[in-house]
Image (cartoon, rainbow, N blue to C red; front, side, top):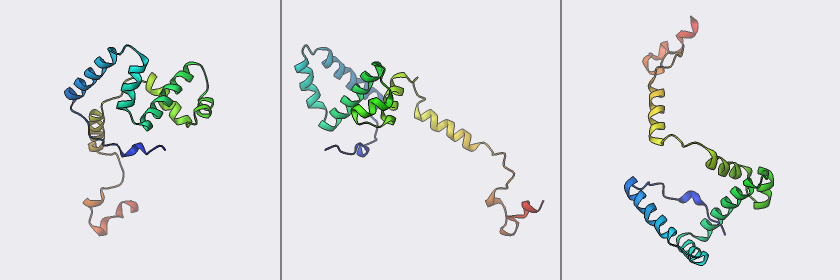
Length: 135
């Protein structure tokens, strides 16, 4: 039975540590000489649910390369078209802006004064709150 993947801890690893872990993992993958050894490593690392998710995503990518439509792929794999679109876009999309920079951009946008004709609510006395409508 599949479990909900939304319960993953969202804490990020430190960049240097993460790079070291990936370098070590990829080094071990390069040393694999047979499909059986690769299968053993995959079975040790991934849960059955994670393997199903990876298999479906790889199958989506394979079927997209075969020229099938999103709907046909969704029917074959029992996956929503949004998942097919997500997989395709992740293989073809340019690199995203770092989330840190996204939040900085949003902060800059929010701090700019808005060209609103409505006065700020907190700067008015209660009796003056709606007076601008009489102008």
